Image (cartoon, rainbow, N blue to C red; front, side):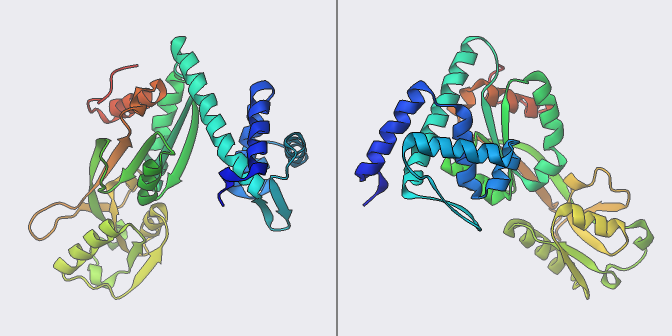
Length: 315
């Protein structure tokens, strides 16, 4: 039997709706939903900049008012009870209603505000996003930002579930809604200048985990150029890979996005047929949500920085 058909949960839902109508503090929603996500009181308190005793007290008050235990506590963390699961479903809808109402009211006043949720690839969030957000928040300080830094495949999956307004991902993907090519950069072979004259076969190859598309590209290039590294160092993260090369530990194949401050040798790569190795970055959005001022403003900001036409009208 599903939660929604349980009489106790029906009563709980009515209590939540009644409290929402009269005295629901939006902070209570944020506390509950964040704790449901993290499963940990300490991490929740840190994320919300609250003292843990304050957080615990507000949760106790919430449970007391609703007349139900929402979380099971243990030394390993907290877990939602069936009543907590029912509350979470209602609170998610309530939070969205708050956001929609705020956006409609602010839109009527001509102010760009509301919440902007962005899922972005780890590489883009490291090397491009900070400057974009610095420009965006200067012009639109009333917008509340929620940033999710994930692998590109996860960014696309989150867009499919409807969680973020925008995703910025690297590589190719299927997406039926708004899709904007931001950049197509070279993939380069990099090495320290001290290793400039050393044959690659005599140097350590520094590899990193990447998505299957990028790994396949590198494997094809290595095969076509008959390179079989005798020594391989596997690392995590693009910045770590570049740091190893700068220290003279070997050579690597990386996208150009990470080379702004690299002072070694970087050579764009080509397949045997002359086709360049490239890496693309896309911005994904849903057309109906692109009507929201904060979403339109972000798309316009990115397009201005990349010097490309914006697909949405100016705010």
